[in-house]
Length: 152
Length: 462
Image 1 (cartoon, each protein chain N blue to C red):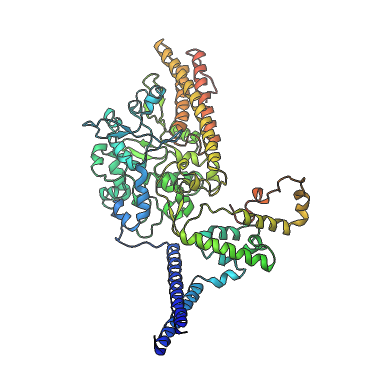
Image 2 (cartoon, rainbow over the protein chains, first blue to last red):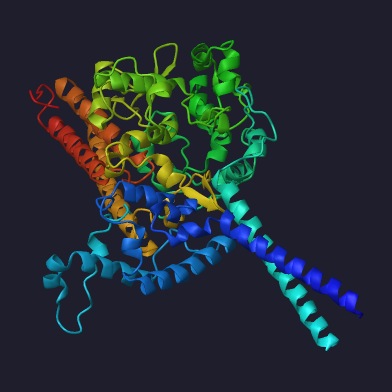
């Protein structure tokens, strides 16, 4: 291939890389990717499958004191974004393929994150309860206090 | 040198092309989900208030129509549903599949309904798809001359009523009530269909049955609310119970005009309905064995449900019997109306976060307890009927006999109220149990009345 041939090939590939980057950027914008970096609860309800949880939270006892991230991501920048990345990936795969259990159930890792959130805000009152015997299973806040975050 | 550069370029092209394909595929998928979430439908046909054929509505709403058709499935649950039993078609009854006979399963029912058409043919329930067929060919059409009023609940009557009444739903209803059933049958084309519950322009739920419109007006009047217009005043969640309440109710035919009336003017509880009938001095038939003025209860699911905790908590019929289903990102109501026990995940687990086996066993425990009480009440009733029959044969007459017959009327109606109700107690477990308890009490009180002697009548006989 001659010099000019190589030039055109390079131009084509540059064009294609540019187009791919542009498409990627557009998908990011179309899917409101930036919203997931915020703390705004409405971002979690971008997917209407979460509509019930969102409106449940609005009617719940914690609506004025906690947003989604406060209970569903750990405190601290690293933990928060690690959790967002992991859940974001899992949610994208699930919703794109349509393969997920219904009714939607929290997984073990996220349940742990949430339980810790309960204890972290309500430290004074739960210290006495949660200090059980060594080896006894940890008390499960959500089992009884099911509707404080979002009803059901 | 050039080859390497070319190689890089080719690689870059391939990777960029693949990335773009993947990006576009993801974009299209996200677009689809967003579109589904808006819940659109394709307007293949224009629907209006004259189209009764559900297949036409199904062109716009194929998902709902597909599930609606599945009500032909016959599945048994422990205390409900039915099995498909083959039979040889005859000229009078061309059905090749029917459900099992309840009166053969429990012959005490024949005694309970002696002298009434139900003692001749009565079968287990099956899906909505069969309602018109089963009503047309049941032997109860042969042993008695049934009126067209029966069609109110067993066919799509909205369009036929309006045609018969020249556009007036109530006039058409009144006309058909008085026609012989087989005459009315010629005007009917479908079992319950889309138009019976949905407005064709907005798909909003609406009540089309005059029986319910008038019944709920009477009920609300008894609660102090005048001129209740259900289609204007009911909330959306209430409608999700009312459209089912159009037919799953106790009723009777009033007067010579055979007007279909729901006996709710005094309230929805069994004692309110009993009081209504007693005041109207109404009887469905005279018992062949005892001469008692007896009542038949028919499928009072709406009344029973309204006494339970689910109704109290705002859970409507559709929440359990037509639960929401996700198809892609679309959320639709499952139009395959059936026992929630066949769909525990979607019917129960949205609110009750326990395992399916635990939920099922809880339901069956409630039903088993109800069924046991029902059997005790049935035996008590049989004993009373036998006693009255024997007393009459022995020449027993007088106020004590009338008292015993009245106790039979009440015992029988209370028992039938639970027997004919299709949840075997689940819709309101404690209510069902107390109704059966009172039925047993009435039956035994009836027996006691006979023992006092023909002249005696107790002053506090309820």
